Image 1 (cartoon, rainbow, N blue to C red):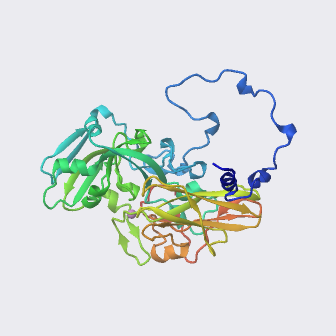
Image 2: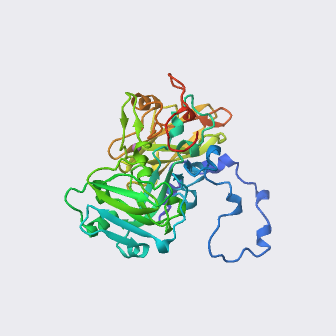
Image 3: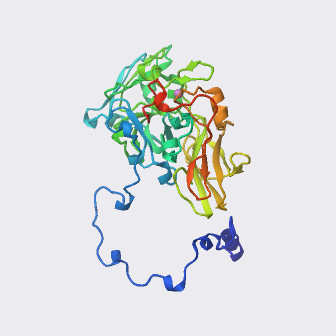
Length: 431
Ligand code: CO
């Protein structure tokens, strides 16, 4: 590389020294001399399974106090404490309807039956012998964003509690289409009824068309066996669709000509609209984004900050993420890290110098189909205030002159709404 090219690279985005200046530089007398304590003793020995640093123990999922002793409920991935796009398996959000079953892989069987030429039964080893694919996909609970239904807004909201019911993993498994081809679909087959082997016998209806397109019967997550909370040893991964249809601890798939209308898709996961209509089978997750830094309850200082966040859409690849630094009046384009797959979470970034004045920052995502996120007002023109699912309005963060960051959502006209007042089953998140 020649000198001119190097200088060009160094000056890209900011003047040389611009970032260092903000931290004050380093006086010659402050340059560390001698050895640190850790250099004077031998470190820990080899270990068979890695643990994170003891200094990172506060990076944990958020469990609402009302759900700590329950077997049905959800907890949130700590979005503002994570980098990149992969959610560590140990921090992937959870959603259970009857607790986490302890399935012995030696006894594991998957049965495919119903409208097929040849009913089949697979052991875990059988599944692992078949052609596999590995893809990076987000999984998002249909109830993600449900704190956005609160009116007035919750001023203790964090990025975790705003959108932490989404996680992103590398999933490995067998395409469901291969298993269905082996079984042979009978004339008139239209639906699949996957069932989990948890205490809820969790059951949903999955259209055959989607199953043949890209659904995985997955046994690995981020390179190792799926965690028990995420469906060990085998779960469905249904890319871009609400997490609740991605049946965990999968034991059985019945092929049928009609949906089963199970308790898990009628008492829950239906959507109340502003005109009073209720929709079932709303599976595709609309585009969403969340600024994770700076975000709710964080404290920042004047000067340079890289605004960071996450975006995703169930309709396809994220094409663009925009940032507003003036409460939504004007929008600028953020930089996107390249995503491995279309239905993966994308990391966005934006270089910003905060001048110390009160400001409201926002992000909005655009996907390849041209979908974007509504404002709060636009969202509630369509969706009822007592719904709990599929909230994807733009999240605002208000940065005060003191650098404290809080929820920047507006209080809307109309009846106050809080999740505890909702008489429906809901997603089992916070009350
Ligand atoms: Co839905």
